Image 1 (cartoon, chains in turn yellow, purple):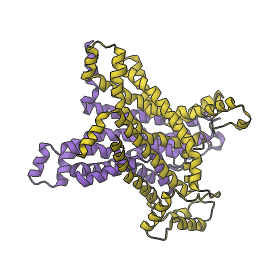
Image 2: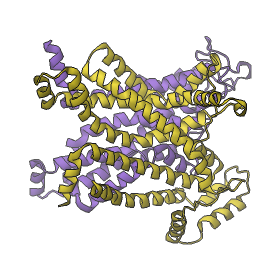
Image 3: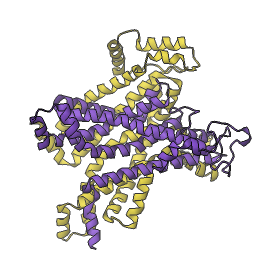
Image 4: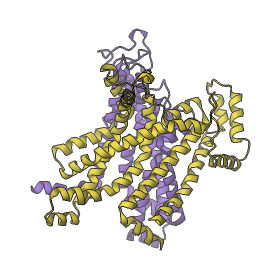
Length: 331
Length: 265
């Protein structure tokens, strides 16, 4: 097990280097130097100042590999540079205060998705072509097709403007400090309700579909038949024998879908004015705050990589075949 | 199909000029003259949506076209040659997949001036990975078949073998991926335009009509409601089309067992 974990870790290292390389290359993707593009945008700061800042920060007058190397060595020391915005705070600090919000949102969303999608998928698979299955299938297709930002707007109109039940922006009410402890928690939860609902919607559709598919595959296997033949109760056959096997591929799908979920927080956070990574990214793009953009990109991608690693390891933990296969392929 | 026709005929059908403001009719609700109402500048939402359909669909088609070309080229090279090329391409795929797409797109767009063409290009460039994987998988199994060996044995070049013999046999899953990629690209484009970083006004797209609708959310619900419905319907129909093609091409995925069981009951 430890060997397998180490092997995955070693394989992930070149990817980590790749992440930094791509993030660095982005700045050179634009036709011409980034400083040129800067100059014909209506920027509040003077072009000359930006030009100087960029050249200074990234050593744009030096050869490419020198630029990359100096950026990388600073990165290793967790020095992401300073923001170009007037406060000029270190990028790491800026991201650090927003990361917990995005992480919290995504973890809660993921938990809701898993908790709901598994029973939905199992039920619609065991009762294939029933009314329940048809309704969830329709829900799945609508869920796939609904633009999250539009859903967010509609829910804001409904719950925020028309009914006035839920707050539609930020994380806390202006009066938060004066509330009692539990009222504070309640206020926080109310602010999160709509964003989480929106972010969960599409993911839930996808997962219940995968779960249904995985379940359908498993139910057809011989060992399920033999479990039934042994005279086991249907609930044991489905709940124990089938579910365990159907859950395996879901772990991988879970890992693979993380980038989408994190990407979705860009839109959700900007609509609901939640101070997370996504909102920071959008602001940075509008302000052309390059160090923040690059730092964000590196950190988000690294997080996804780590999450994928965890998914991989979980998978090998629950499915011994993977470990054995890995050992065999090494020989 | 209907959508494509509507989009193509936009100048003929649209009752009003999509960019002509009318100060007397700012934020009018749906009426007979303006079936879907007007926006902050008094422009007809229905006409703007028709023109928006053109941009959204064009972005969908072109970006998926770009993604498919890259995906086929890299996937074919990896699957056919194997070895180092394969390993390199697959590492690249892995690498691209760890970047949440929207973050990567935003980062790139921060450096480029957003126009319809750059949007198409960047969405295409960040969407080829699934096609590459599919094509590679198909090639891995197809290259061992007799007809490929035969093609080699009569002295055909690798390019010719790939192009004339393997690719046509691998095109089915690619077609499905393309049909499913178009709605994804449309969603991405409208998301970017919604954030104000996609196709820029005065070009109407469904995303930026929604973006403008957001600012008038308390008075003009029609501004935000209809473009969203348009996106939903478009994406839904492409997804269903994709599923349909997949079922038609691959009977194995049709859950035949389930159907037989339900028929015998």
